[in-house]
Image (cartoon, rainbow, N blue to C red; front, top):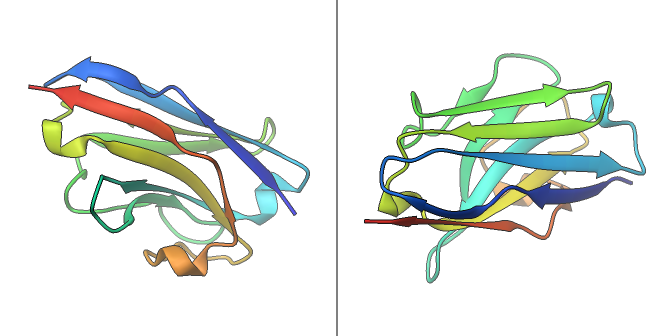
Length: 123
């Protein structure tokens, strides 16, 4: 089992930047593949970025070049550095973990979820 708590969301202007964090506890963080998902009102939850145990970090096409995912296995932390934010990035952002080696884009493949942190980008 692992517990995940997100932080760092807020209100930012179009073109601005934010850094989200995910703190893990209750499990061996280094044995989980981690990912960020987001869900806008009335929309399905979508994959944003993944940090697998095996392989390279991955990004959705919509955020590639603007977002950077990273993880610190010693401290049990994951981050999402966001820049050039757009109004369409507005969503509730979730930290997720799965007991597998590879990053996948389907939310149903992840076993543990945080409560989410809201990111709102104004125009």
